[in-house]
Amino acid sequence: MTEEEKIFAGMLFFPGDQQLKAIKLKAHNLNIDFNALHEDETEKRASILKELLGSLGENSFIQGPVTFHYGKHTFIGSHTFINFNLTVQDDAVVKIGDHCDFGPNVTIVTPMHPLIASEREALITAEGEKRRLCYAKPVTVGNGCWLCANVTVLPGVTIGDNCVIGAGSVVTEDVPANSFAAGVPCRVIREITAEDSIAKKPEFSGQCEVIK
Image 1 (cartoon, one colour):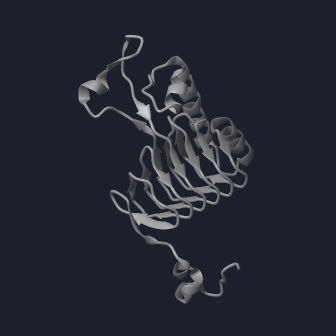
Image 2 (cartoon, rainbow, N blue to C red):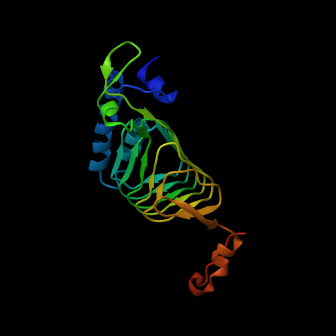
Image 3 (cartoon, rainbow, N blue to C red):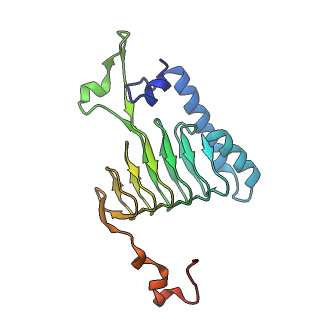
């Protein structure tokens, strides 16, 4: 089993493995290339994202700058907008759905380290080698989600469809679909309902109407 296969199996893996280091180096260099481009250099930016990411759906836009750790482990759906300073430490797989909106400074992390300090320094592998090991848990963000500014999503979390995560939240547990959740740690505040429609807010809706 390769070290990358161990990641996907949820097992301890060696991040210093040469194959993993090569994947990360490629991603880190592509991050720099993407971040150096002007916003209107759309073809060059699209070309880099195609090489960097596992997939990026149609009509999705990433403002940049970005930092992806592996890149190829991240899959982003269609019609999704991602604002400034996205960081994705995608050791394990990260899936972001369609029609999502990310505010500035959203961070998604998947790796985990042992809690005991001596175990963070080194463990003995199945082959009898002393190495610094970690493990990782995948993250999923459903369709139609809005992650507000400075949200951090921790390893193993699934955010259901149509959720809103309040600014500055640290999401440590799964969030059910159609929820407004916020806080540190993030907690469900309430369900999002028809009463939240812009149609119910004439004080700022102006002449705009909801599509039926």
